[in-house]
Every structure is written in structure tokens, then in C-alpha cells.
Length: 191
Ligand SMILES: Nc1nc2c(c(=O)[nH]1)N[C@H]1C(S)=C(S)[C@@H](COP(=O)(O)O)O[C@H]1N2
Ligand SMILES: [Mo]
Image (tube, rainbow, N blue to C red):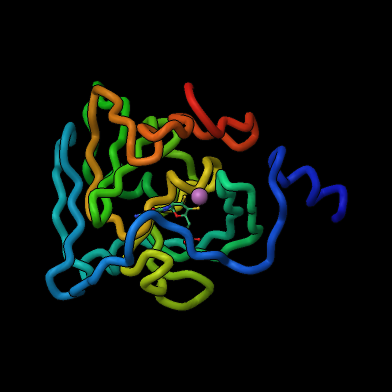
């Protein structure tokens, strides 16, 4: 590995080339014609839109790295979608909102602080590598939070809630770190 790539790899991680499929439970069934995306909680302008409306939102393409808490990392994943901060600009969260709770199919949830969510590489992605997401990688929509372990990058996202209180998600209540910063190797327990 080059010196530069070595510095890009968080402690205790190994670089891989393939893109594994990893999740708890089974792949959900998606009916794209009844699918919708909701933003609720402490916002001035709550949102509920269908897939085709989501595709019309201002989009970006970004290249990011991906770090799974089980130890693999992948560099340079190419995503297309809508930045989290673009969604926040549309819904306008209240000042008291400090956390974001992300709801996915099959009761998977995860949680972020607003500061982390508003970073300029956090994206609701509907394309990977120039093609629509495959079902196993989160079609029709997944969150990608490059600077956190990938259990924060919920696949099959359906809703986001802005809250005053934190609400630890599926893996966060099962012993994985709430903050999940790979550079600090926050894998298990608090914070
Ligand atoms: N809905 C949902 N999203 C999820 C998970 C899950 O179990 N359910 N697992 C997370 C974990 S631990 C990882 S490593 C990544 C894996 O994403 P991939 O399957 O696209 O590689 O998805 C994350 N998002
Ligand atoms: Mo993971």
C-alpha cells in the first residue's frame, strides 16, 4: 500500500476491492410505486415524497470511502443522490433539534448527531457506480455516512426524524459505539 493510502485507512482496518453485502435479517421487498420517503419531527416543513419526486431533488455525485466495523474498508465508492444537508435545507430543522434518527425497512434504525449528518459528504444515495442501487445494497435509497462505521449507512431508508433526544439505533443498542468514529476506533460500547 502507498504511504498515502495507508494514512487513508483507519486503524485496525484492512483494504478490500470487492463490495461485500452485509446486513442483519433479510433483503426487503420493495414496491417502488408505493414507496415513500418521510422527514418528520422538529422541522418547519415536513416532507413526504415518492421515489420519482426524490429523483427530482438537487443531486450530486461524490466519491467516498466506506469502513465496516467488522474490519473491512473500501476506497472510492461513487455515489449519486441528495446530500443530507440539501434535505435539511428543504425541511428546515428547529434550533432545538440535535439528533437525527434514521428509519429503514424491517425496523432497522440508526442515529447521528445533527453535526455529523450535516457534513458535506453525507448523502442519500440512489445510484452506485453509475447504476441504480441494487436491492442488496439498499435500493431504492440508502444513507451513506463516510466518516462513521458503516452501520450508520442505513440501507432501504424510509424516514428521518429530527429530535431533541438521542435514540440509539439497532446496532447501537447491541453494544456497538454510538458515535462510531473509525479514526478513533470507536467500535464497541460508549461513546
Ligand atoms: N437497513 C440496514 N442497513 C444497514 C445494515 C443493516 O443491517 N440493515 N447493516 C449496515 C452495515 S453493518 C454495513 S457494513 C453496511 C453494508 O453495506 P453494503 O451491504 O452495501 O456493503 O450496511 C449498513 N446498513
Ligand atoms: Mo458493518
